Image (cartoon, rainbow, N blue to C red):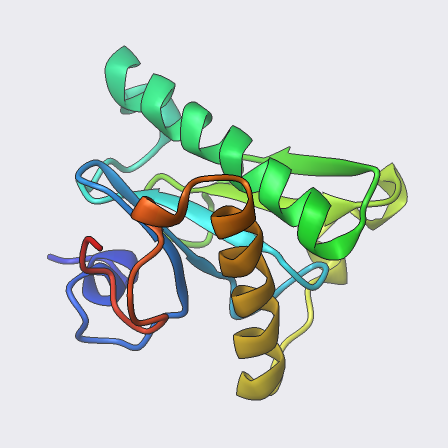
Length: 149
């Protein structure tokens, strides 16, 4: 059975994509802790990070680092945070978000029902920062598409 993330990757559920490559995609969280909260998700369905092979984990971490640099730039944050939990959806994903302190890094701070226009604007800021950082080739042509550029 496909996870909700697989359905997003396949385009069956809308997503706001900032990155797409052969291994993974990055899209905006619909329940962001902060503006610019992105999810790094492998195309392959893996239930949890401890089940992933080392090559996949290495690629996800490499992409998470790039996304972290982009959210720092896009939101003028002193740090990017990386959270791995995975209880809500059984499909490995890394949360990357701009951070100003540890107190905000709790899923209890996640906002529900964020207007789509806000999610679109935050995603576009990350997409622009990725272009500025020289990673434009991995930014999908259409923000709503997980297709490779």
